[in-house]
Length: 397
Image 1 (tube, rainbow, N blue to C red):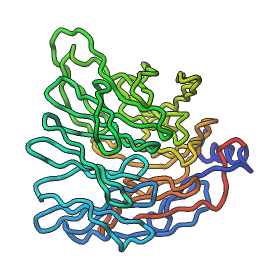
Image 2 (spheres, rainbow, N blue to C red):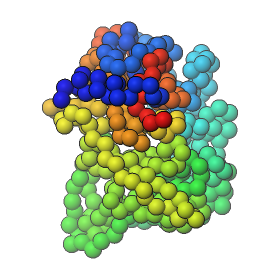
Image 3 (cartoon, helix red, strand yellow):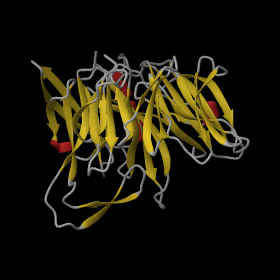
């Protein structure tokens, strides 16, 4: 069935319902809007005139942007509220030979970055709005990642020492009283603070031979010892660190996102061109799976990238792209929205070949912030807010 007739059928069957759909900035990107009538507004523009130009590196759903700029002998990272782009606050400045990975937390409430202290990596957790910060450090280990509970601000963090596996700890809001939870990585709190999810190693006996695998996101080659780690099991724990649910089907899942209502998770495993929506239900402190739905790209030659939940957790926006022949870049990028409840989906827009959609975030249920890069001569980064006028719903009443 052709795409246009498919979209037409969906619109006819879904007329009268509500959804937060997303679209692109038509004038800037010359993107072809397929189904939605939208209003576009350029929030900020960052012309790239030299290697020292300031450029945006990440958006948050709270309407902030992280900026990076090269100075004479340093890298400067700053944050600003897009309601007032001229007002910027410096987050951290690092030596020019050091490229610090500065990033927002999933909800945008915090900023994380690492810093070297006496040969070990400490992790700084900084509040986006106030700049107040907590530093996690261990004289015998590198602190490589963390997650802050939106409910009580308790901190999960991953420490990596000379042991075969990283260790996950649970600490108070100021980083004090860390308590060992398990060996693992990829720790992330549920939005309601009742659960957290991580990957724990599944150890099997092996012959001592080394195998190689390619990371599907970074496309880097790595070696691992058979018998050390056969897989990474996705597990959910209670807020006090008690194992509650094993998601054996999703071993090795490198993408795990809680829905805002904490009643579903989005999971993607290595080699999967799509993703899974897993429904969860809690009864008397016991968590159980209620459904497992596999979302695949509309084009069999494509794969799905950067899925994100809408603010109400009822819809997911994602990019569908075709990997080019050299295998190092994506082309024909399109943004889709799928309903988590009905699995109905619709193509929203297609990005012009000369544009790159680096990332996007929902703002509410009917707005999208998109970070776009013009790869043609006169390169610039633009942040565009898109509001939906016409209601083309995928959601049930």
